[in-house]
Amino acid sequence: MLTAVPIGEDGTFTTGVPHPLFRIHSRAPISSTDLFTYAVSADGHRFLVNLYVKPGLIPPLTIVLHATSR
Image (tube, rainbow, N blue to C red; front, side):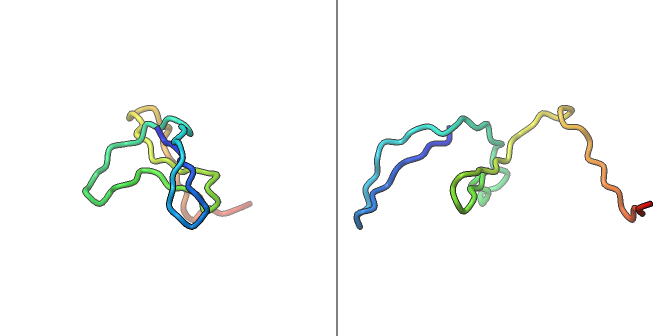
């Protein structure tokens, strides 16, 4: 569960009550330095989450190199 916690703006560090944003099912870390499986946009309104997806559920990715337009 990804949560948000309001913080005080009066010059001292105070926190409010956490409230849930949404449930994420992120993948397991792959190394000791792989701490975060998500990234937050600079404005705080969007999240990029690295999810585990079962093999076979993702269509193949096709990359075309040196394609010419007609």
